[in-house]
Image (tube, rainbow, N blue to C red):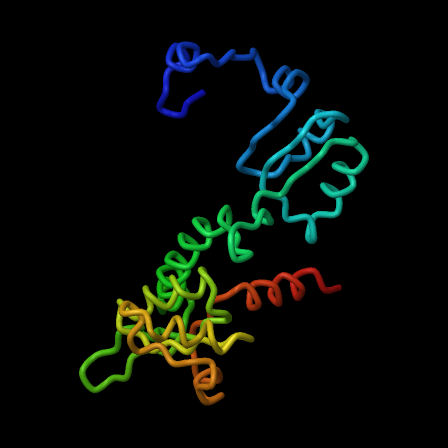
Length: 208
């Protein structure tokens, strides 16, 4: 299975290894996947089985129709709620994404990558770069932590003032401005992080 565990170890733990994926789909009552079904797997979906995986169906109507037509029970793990209506399955992914977005954004701001050349940390006599975070959830909080760590000035903008205050109070988020920061912070920021920016970019790419 190429996951750092030998086949014998799986068998010793009670697992039965199938010859191919089609056999697993045909026999298993519950399929647990990291990624959503790929087009090559749509024909393997069947009624009576249960699928537990990440399902972002809004931008993928083909997948949504395939799931409906199959008659299977599909559960999107990123929508499973925990205490306080949190999303425990989604939180670890958002933590990683929030940390990575700042590093990736700083990379693409380099002149050699076609960016503006803005230096997030700044230099003596040069102000640090401005970052706008859209939302103060798990993603936004971790982006703010990294932004603060590299010396950037970050403004967190979102619908929940309480969440923005939470981000600001965290020790690792010093220098993070609340959502009420001046609009000038948004206009001058060379880097924005958050789902809203990605969603707008996706809509523009699909526009005729």
